Image (cartoon, rainbow, N blue to C red; front, side):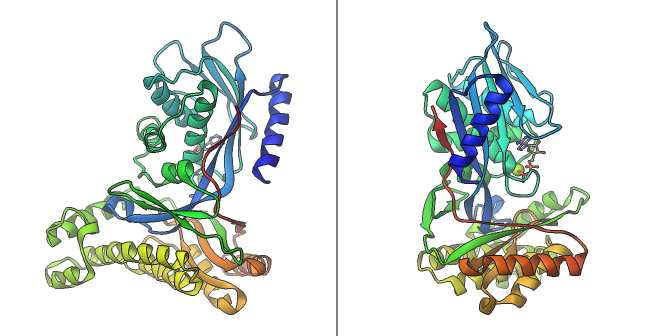
Length: 392
Ligand code: ADP
Ligand code: MG
């Protein structure tokens, strides 16, 4: 569904739910990271794009007056509605999913952005928990809705940081800055090169209509002990210490080779991934600017092997997708493919020829099923725009 189609659908659903038309509508996209994995907490670069999947919120002033609460209903079945009382300080509460919105509302209120009582309908086309950042879409959509209602604008960087803070403090997830930045700042036909140290952003044009991004959800999520992420972070810190630099962002491949014999073998490989991945991300941005798709594709494969072998965060299903994609090759329309997101399941991302998308999707889906016995979910997206007010 295009964004205008989605808006029409949500207007209809709002009217059905609340018996009147909405006054405001806001939308914020999910995202896929094209390259730059596990670089964010090493002060490195990431290169995400917003996808044509959105969290949308339609709203009107609360009908029961005087009302000082925000009611949010979800169009998805089985999602418990949320009521957020504005008369008392907004705190984390139930249902659990409402904490993403609660955190944003609390952050807005703290900045004097005060929407008053609202009736809200939420509809999201971002798959939940699939690594495409439905959580940031929900946060950024909430913030954008409050901007629409109050007519007050939040500076984009401040808005992204406010949403990140909501995820940290209300949802208990210590995420980086990528998801919220791209959901706020994405632009149609552009990727976003984000420096996770300085928070500087640069839009990288990708307007060649002959290519597209294909997202393949493995539909698996391996539950690990939970120590994988903190362990990786500690290994990166240990490597930076050995190298005598504040973070791996400041290290080079040569410098790492020089300390190899006094570095633990696993720590060495972790650092080799991060240092190489930061370089690959910058090269990929250059390749995209030059529409040099074979080069970008090779960098994506290199990223995957590095994540698989050095960082050890892939899994059999993600490896299967990449292997199938590589088998199809440029002749079949695939330039490159890699796991995306934290790893151990979730999605892979492929750079493909637009004209071959349907054939490629069919082949990956069939071969993945044969190899793993699992049904995958695939969809393609052009780089989409960041959060917008659709009505207000
Ligand atoms: P991801 O951001 O990759 O989709 P997360 O685990 O970070 O995965 O966020 C998923 C969570 O976000 C869901 O479990 C739910 O709590 C919340 N969420 C996101 N979108 C919605 C929505 N439309 N309705 C209800 N909850 C949502
Ligand atoms: Mg998330």
